Length: 301
Image 1 (cartoon, rainbow, N blue to C red):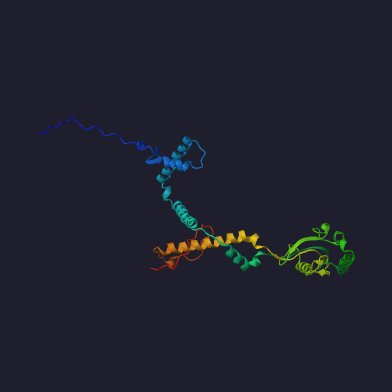
Image 2: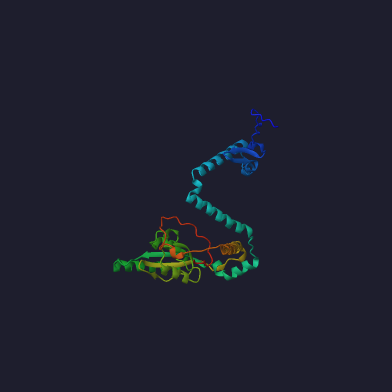
């Protein structure tokens, strides 16, 4: 016959502490901070161990508080996290594909785009400008015309005197005290505040030292002298190889990413009702979300 002892009770089981696990360094709420967490955090961090542990504890406390307040469910926060995850997938694609560009590919692109690497011809010229606008009297206009003709006659007889003649005759305050120098003019490009007939006349001069005829425009009269001439040239392949290589690498990487995106999209069930899209463009004040990768043809339900 069994005898029951009402006053007898089982001995309580010993409590299990998280710190019984030698890997645990701290407890924050229900979360553990382990030695592995600590080692990941201390990489390239010259900080005292105690200070780093305090930092980890504070961080986990802030994260738990944020979750308690529902910040992790905020739509903007969720969208930001999703964008980060999407970017991580793209980065993974880039890391998985080693893009190589061969010398033959570089040479082929160089030949195909040689015009892109051509340095246009340029010249350097000097001018004398005598103002004579339409509101001048006929007498004054004749006087200015005589002045530019006189300057041209002297420049023809004494070509080396052009700088001093510019200082004497020219009304252009920017160039007259530097010998009329216009600087370099590039073929096919305009020059700020320099009239097209003047540019055309300058490029029409053949030999260094040649002097133009008098050029008359609505502003007045010009005389142009060619002082330097540099022919067009093509940059050697060796100097543009790094630039072409980088371009080809970007193009190959983009094609690879597009292929990966197409493959991912093809493996998903995707349906869309484009007829439900709102009409019109988004408001300029509305922050636009990044566009997703181009999708294949989607099925309409």
